Length: 255
Image 1 (cartoon, rainbow, N blue to C red):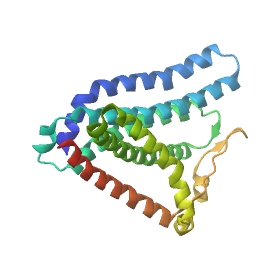
Image 2: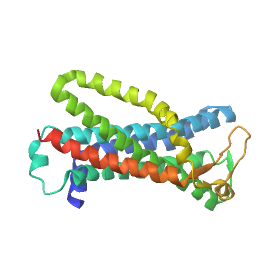
Image 3: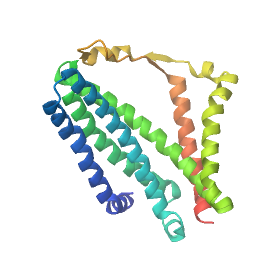
């Protein structure tokens, strides 16, 4: 696994360093320039908040683009897959782990800068600010894991389709994605699976006592509940999805 991670670093260190420099410039330097040249304090706060969400969105996009490039680098190289002592699950797992690691480190810088520059909008101790950052990082990491697995599934579908229908595979993948987004919630609702999953409720409202408070009434952080059955079901599905997709991909790329 270590060798695979070092290989990813050797291939994408320039890309990642470039992204890091741009991100640091946006989250650290731009807010200072805005504060210096904008007279309205309120507008500065709004722009800071907007920049924070933009950079977090960029971080997710960058994660998927880098992961996609990593997959495409080895696509078509049968020797990479056939003559490698590691299993397909290990090869793909290393790519996901590397992408998520860089994504997580980048989000540490972005959330640190965001909380610092929005400190006049939130009131709390250093510990409360740290708890807020940890909560944001956990949510972003979970989102990153889910998105990379979904991206792997549709990338595999794209590669499979490319073998049979060529360039039209992009359209096929997009159509399948849209159909899943539209009809999956309806199917789950029709089967009343939601009611089965909403079991074992655990309220997270107690976390509010460990988090800072908003200095304005325009921003509130509402933490609801999680359901144990739903969480277990979700992670089982995504683990199975990863395992089955790797099995499928193994047949596709070595064809």
